[in-house]
Image 1 (cartoon, helix red, strand yellow):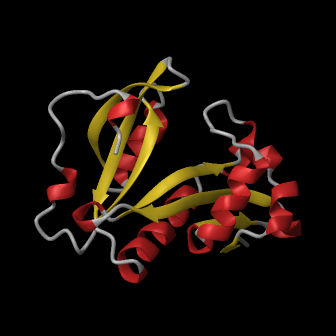
Image 2 (cartoon, rainbow, N blue to C red):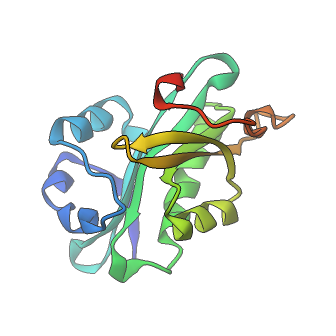
Amino acid sequence: MTTIRRFCCNDLLRFASVNLDHLTETFNMSFYMTYLARWPDYFHVAEGPGNRIMGYIMGKVEGQGESWHGHVTAVTVAPEYRRQQLAKKLMNLLEDISDNIDKAYFVDLFVRASNAPAIKMYEKLGYVIYRRVLRYYSGEEDGLDMRKALSRDVEKKSIIPLKRPITPDELE
């Protein structure tokens, strides 16, 4: 049985195996601690039998006015637990918090342009490619900014794609 609960400090010492995937962005401990302190509602872990960490999602809420949005900083599932809808459950949780608690207009995320399986999964979850960010990942690989409109964005303005790619310094 899988339990989804808030991430806690002790999890920082237990989740390294989930981060071993080469497509998963990893950060230093202070980065994770900042998210845990500032946006605890947006940081969850999926735990399996024996308290084994199966995956996690880390995000935040940011922006102003119609740019007020939830952001998925990282979502990852250990390889042995993939194809069980776990990432979908974690994404749905972050979307629900963004929509119903923080009243955001949309949720966004960045994904490597080469990560076709993730892009396909996000599209199945209702995300669209909003814009391409040139050399977003380490100055080498392009990133795709994908968005999903929430209930507050009645006219779906937040997901109208930009016509040209941008550079990282143009990100707001």
